[in-house]
Length: 472
Image (cartoon, rainbow, N blue to C red; front, side, top):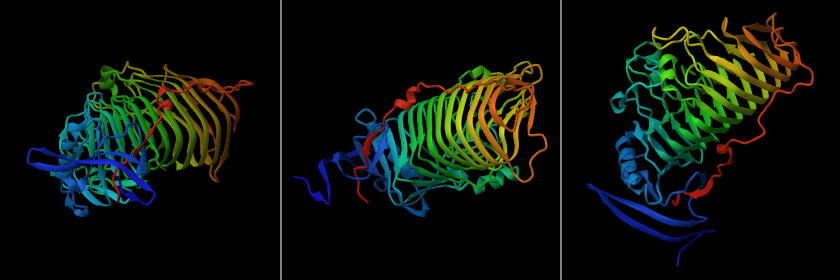
């Protein structure tokens, strides 16, 4: 007979003792009806443990790097037996980087705060990414991300709005002072992995990118609040990089860089690696980024970017809405991009495409490797307090083609640019666009730019109702 806990009944709780090495760890195996904290997950877990079971101390001072690493190492043994979840309870949990495992959930209580260590000795070094050829901040190597994993399957990082603070000011200062010998860490990076969920968290002050899935597939990122100072360097919110089947929805991002940036490798290294980013859906995104884009495509796009569908987007005090960034030497392509339903206010640009983004990993890029930018579709846009409607700059003798813009109303701020549309080396059509576009984008009557009516497979993934099996 199970005890009654208010209105919650826990059925058949079994506790088992597992001895691994010298560690004696209590792991709960539970079947739960209305017990613990419920949360949605791509998969639920049979086994549960709490960070304090492994010596975790949530005082904001004690290092918990060993506790996280030992906990995940122990719980990895349950991967073939229903998987396991590690619960981070209320407290401030200082830690260096740790690696995740397959069939695993990291759950943060809403009063839990993970704090990234500022002790560099706790941060492992990693080789450069093969599709990049060098680090972004320094040529040789990079620091591990705070939460890292490679070659994994079925990973969930979630909570009831629990928080992770990257304490990035330490790293931003080193970046500005040119004191970095390795590229700064990201907050969360998963490589060569499949079936990923990152949801219902508050992420703060990453040293560089916040979330960087790379060479991965079947990814859901939802219900995230991401916040960094608007002058912090390279603090992109969500950066799918050479990824397939990605769903980003219901996220609020304040960033010093692009809120979302879709990438696929850099110049000759990305061309050789040849792994595109494709089949990506973005819905109900809100962005604040005065110096960057709500959604950027590139500039590292040498493996190709295609079939991106974005709708119901809001940008406030942001440099541009959707920005395509590329250059001679990139190769690759950006094609079949579909955007509808943007509400924008206080913008420098509404539409921005750049064919002369001059950042290169080294002088070895091929000047004959020209990017193919085609099939770019925008519709149903309302923008106010705008400085300039569009800056569309393709590449000489390699124009950006098949651009479609329809049903757009743009209102200016108090000091608008005299020439609202600056267009070179582009071609396409428009309809019902105010103010009138440039001559390279002539009006075509009865035009509505396309948006796919079918759904991507990642949109049909249904999350299950899971529980922490623990009370706080």
